Length: 274
Image: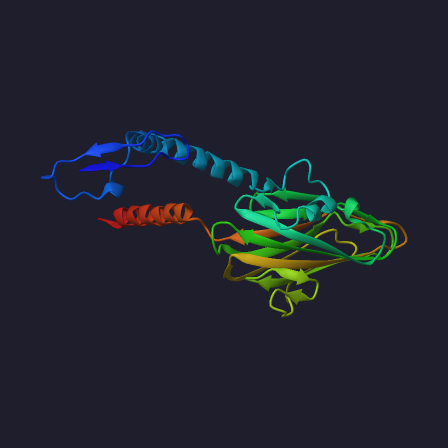
């Protein structure tokens, strides 16, 4: 039996296959031409290269999407932090994002407020310095995301370097949305109101104050701080306002503490032996 395949539109030669009458029935569609077999072998041999190129492409995309560090020199003012939007910046394993500003009263702009990230002894942000000549009420909001899971179990707020002439006052209060982002000064993501968690007040002759709190561990925290500065008979200066976040000890740290207790227990038991 003779089977002829018609000439293809691309000018390929027809394939003639001669079979004897004793040959078994063969589905002619399952007989690829020699050129097709060579092409298949070439595609298979290129598969590892395709995987490598695809992996490099994905890697380059992930690297380009990596947020910058909050200590980057290009991020010196609140204006630049607001410009980061949802991409944010990192301090250790914490991502700070979604910054916004509310000016209730005063002449302080976002370009006048310095912001710096720090990671010792715990991750946090520093705002300031401030220098005001008239009563000022401003608000700063942002979100903190733990990149290692629900490891944020506390926060602290501090004012340092406050001073001026006459009867002045500096106060900072902070509200929080637990497990969700903060949308504005009065609303969390689900429409609820942020909860009051911290407050620090400074009056003469003091120059600093600290407030701290703990709460069940969360992976996301939305914050809004209200900063009120009231000068006396002269300008009021505040060196900085710090926000720190207390993490859950890492497993390695907990293991070291446990090992230390075991060593101490063994030591005391050995000393008590007659």
